[in-house]
Every structure is written in structure tokens, then in C-alpha cells.
Amino acid sequence: MEAITMIKERRSIRKYKNEKVDRKTMEEVIDIARWAPSWANFQIARYTLVDDEATIAKLTTEGVQGFAYNINTLKTAHGVAVLSFVKGKSGRLDKYGDFDSSNAHLWESFDAGIACQTFCLAAHAKGVGTCIFGVIDDKAIADIVDLPKEETVAALIVYGYPDESPEAPPRKTVEKLLRFI
Image (cartoon, rainbow, N blue to C red; front, top):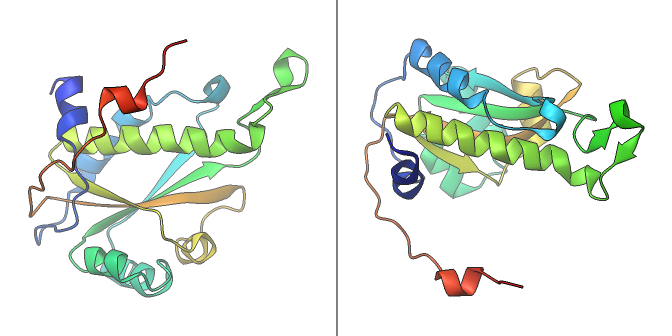
């Protein structure tokens, strides 16, 4: 699939077919997603894939702060990716003389965002739909999936075979988004 087409056609999918995505396909998605760029190539993104129904049910009741929109999406999901990152690496260049970015505290999230988008595009290329959740309880999720202590939850990404084809929402014009100096 051509990159521009993938970017323009990928949608947030909130309804899934009653079919699990096989683990081999998800390994292929991660094999592609691992190529996401990151600060100083630290590759801090980690993926905990959950296809166990009991654990997904627990994420539904304890991991999304009771947010009905997320709960309804999880009800048809057979797979959830917990995207996490290794803390304390991005934003710093110790190997070059202890340099820090003025916004070093943001770079972990920036790297996780790049990894998240790459994961979603890789899944889309494999015919797997995704929906990124922002309303989450990161500490509850970390406990539910027994996340290593050196990692922080960045997002939940529900995935599965799409059972809907939503239209593209309106986009702002280039003129509203772009400035030349």
C-alpha cells in the first residue's frame, strides 16, 4: 500500500468483527512498527498485546475511567495494544556531553506518538483496524498487564478486523495549518 494512500485512508475503527487477529499478523505489525524513528535511536516504545478476553474485560472496567465511548469500543474488541515507553532516555544526549533538550520532559511522549502512528499505519497495511484511546488510567493499566517498573503507559490501541468503514472527517485547509516565514 502506498504511504500517502495509507495516511489518507487510515481511520479510527470502533467496531470490529467477531474474529481475533492472529498473533503472527500482530508480530508482523510490530516488526514494521519497530522501524519508527526515536530520539538518539533509543527505541523506547514497547508493545504489550492483549488478546485474552478476561484481561480485555478488566481493561474495560478498570482502565478507561468509565468513559462510555471507550467501553463501547472495547465491547467488540478482541485485541488491545498497551503502548508503553521506557522512562528516562529520550530528550537527553549524555554520550555527547550531557546535553538536554529544553523540552526533554516531552520527548518520551513524542517518541511514543511516533511509535503509535507507525503501529497504526502498519496495522492498516495488514488489514487491521485500530483506535487510539486517550482517556485511560495509566496506573491501573500498568497493574493489569504487569508492566515493568521502568515503563510508563502511553496509550491503549484497540485493534481488530474492521466491521465499519467510516468516512474521513473534515480536514482543515492547508492555509489554516501552514505558515511561511
